[in-house]
Amino acid sequence: MKDNSDFITLKNITKYFPGTIANDHINFTLGRGEVLALFGENGAGKTTLMSILYGLYQPDEGEIFIEGKRVKIRSPHDAMKYGVGMIHQHFTLVPVHTVVENIILGTESAYLSNINIKKRVKKIKEIGKKYGLEVDPFAFVGQLPVGMQQRVEIIKALYRNAQILIMDEPTSVLTSQETEKLFHFIHDFKAKGHSVIFISHKLNEVMEIADRINVLRDGKIVGDVSRNEATESQLTKMMIGRDLMIPERNSTIFTNHKEMLKIENLTIVGDRKSKAVDDLSFNIKEGEIFGIAGVSGNGQEELAQAICGLRKVKSGHIILSDKEITNKNALSIIQQGVGYIPADRHKEGLVLDMSIEENLFLKNHSDSSFINYGFLNQNKIQQKAKTLMKNFEIKATSPTSKAMTLSGGNQQKVAVAREVNIGSKVLVAVQPTRGLDLGAIDYVHKTLLKEKKEGKAILLISTEFSEIMGLSDRIGVIYRGKLLKIISREDAKVDEIGLLMAGITEGQANEKK
Image (tube, rainbow, N blue to C red; front, side, top):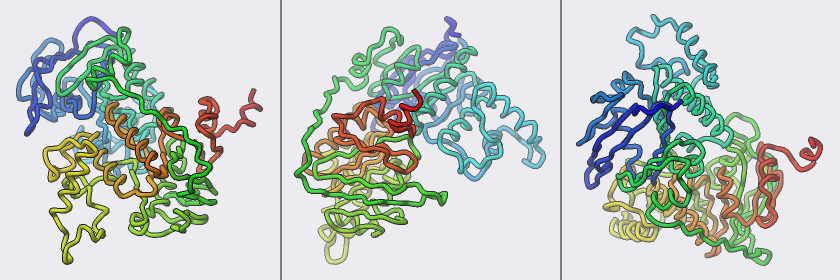
């Protein structure tokens, strides 16, 4: 329960990086028993500010006060001493270690063989039971789904007696059900007098979970409003400095358009040797966006990988513009005009240590227009990169800047720019706006609609229901690798699609009434 005292106060926090001011004289307070949302675009300075509070960065100017006392936080170890824990967007777990090993890592000075594991396991189970975060202490982290891995991160912070939890984009990899459970935990944690700093760019989540909202833009706090006084339009305008324009969706009927991609009775075996995709069929015409709705883990990514030559098909056919491409290699499929925006831009979409121009060129190395007498033509590559950077509004000082130096939104723009350039016929977009702020989401959506207008066939796979409903011409609902139903956007009903996503067909729903 919140009291009136400020648990944490940041005064004039300023952080410089080469060529930019990440945090510009920020003043900030957090009360006991308060959920404070830090809301802003990627690159606004949210994570940098919290990394300073957690001791990962040192401020160039400014002071930190905890319970009214000025403190120096030089490391995460210092932060933990003051009861500050941080749940990172990209988890800091060791996949080959068990849950209990990950949780006690760094807390014990003795060798593992001398540690009383039973005692530690008991404490982990008590924390799990107390907050509804049960997880098998002896499971290997690398084999857990992402929702469970996040539980491990939270338990790790609570094991260290955290009273303040910093959560950096905590729902970016969660399903709607997992997000609901996370919010339930936050309410329980807050009810015990603890505090949460919730970093997000998702407006609906901020409005649901926060008591107070601080809006960051260009390294400055431009708004501090209570949840009861905040409006969605007000927060959006503060975040991006302008009103968002909703792009018009062209509701053209595609009966006379050429069929560009056809999937026939496709069956794919997943990593666990069971059917990830089960006898699935659909087609996409030129100038059409076909959306696949479903809870994550129902075969969506395996389907996308198979279309793009990254996973073998057990049976069935993939036909691109009347040509069979089933089980063709990835390079062959790229050369035939298929672009692929993967779900994870860090693991699959980009090589972060490479420059922007290298990332933009990654899939064009066999393109003869960039080769001169057997050597790559660096001038042509750089000119092409500059053109794509301009066309896709990628903000960076130079094409030679490393991808890791870009904000999440600009990293995604690099991946989108490359794949749109490659995908002359078909664009496969998997979670294309995952982890992006409203401004970047708006840009990606407009790009997909523009490519549709130019006649490309687009397969949109997303767990964001509003994205599927807002962009798709037809919607296929996937459950356990099967397409339960294909519905035109005009006939789509939210309740029906929600039930189908849970595996409940119309007949089953009627039986339960």
